Amino acid sequence: MIIDNVKVYTEEKTFVKGGIMLDGDKIRRVYAEEEKPQFGEEEVLDGDGAYAIPGLIDLHFHGCKGDDFCDGNEEAIERIAQYEASIGVTAIAPATMTLPVEELKQILSVAAKYKKNGTSPKAADLVGINMEGPFISKVKKGAQDERNIIPCNVEIAEQFLEASDGLVKFIGIAPEDNEDYLEFIEEMKGKVNISLAHTNADYDTAKKAFDAGANHAVHLYNAMPAFTHRAPGVVGAVYDGKHVMAEIICDGIHIHPAMVRATFEMMGADRMILISDSMRATGMPDGQYTLGGLDVKVVGKRATLVSDGAIAGSATNLADCMRTVVKEMQIPLETAIACATINPAKSLGIDDQYGSIKAGKKADIVLLKDNLDLQAVVKDGVRL
Image 1 (tube, rainbow, N blue to C red):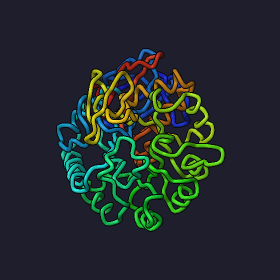
Image 2: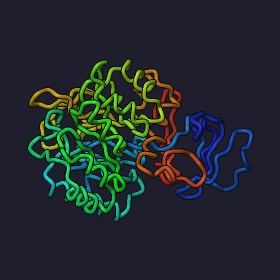
Image 3: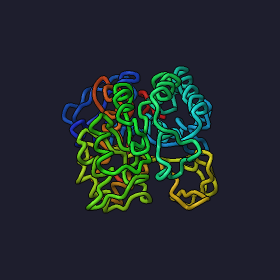
């Protein structure tokens, strides 16, 4: 296939008029308009001037269309993956909730089996798993079930990695609730990315964790102490930990647009990762749903716990979050795309195949109209 007459998003985070030549499920060549080759018998997709961007990568979400990753069956994962691909998210790393250890191991083993059986042509690739619990803080539990919260434990973490057959890419911890957190980080950092997640840590504790090798922050600002001038907390430690990548939810509910703009300026766009944190109500009508066994009420884009009204994940997919960050939060399109493609690919360690449009990489291409509405999705070289 040849995707012609498009504005191609480059690894330099700019757009170049031209096209993309595909060989099966790989990109063969990217050409500028003035280098346009002669077409043979190959199928040509006329992009009609659309933006051609890499397939998006969501490395923190729970579900959509009535299914949750923690439902723990291959059919649910397949439905989730098909919905994600249909909206332009072509690679996924779903997140687990804080559940009993044995239940989590079962969920991870099902995901490993699904991965081994192979992704269907119309589904996003399962490229990892993001473990949001169970090593978190009861004080900042958010929509997590505190009955299942436990201290971080190397042996249990190893069991998670084994059950998932290496699919677990992130394990979150709350360092302030774990006396042995530095030893945990030291032991596990070479095997998995260590996140600070649902934590009430102060600046000093968070900074020690990052200095020890933790390298990721789960949904910045949410489920962590407020960022203030005398107590900068986890956010301040992320700023000073220059190797740390930070997730951010830009659904228009979780964080004020002014704070999003300030954060991109403060942290630098190269460290920001757009996530959806979407739950099973995403793509569904308003109503009552569940997240991690807890009842959640969804009205529009807002999802809250029935029990106390706390924000409980998101009801917005990553593609719409990217649109929101551009249209409502004034982040440049070129920057927003990188934060939903290049940056998550690097954080997951899959940027050799995913995250940008370059010869030899996966032929996962999303075409967007000038107003950013979806025009087409090409997955593994085939238009969906």
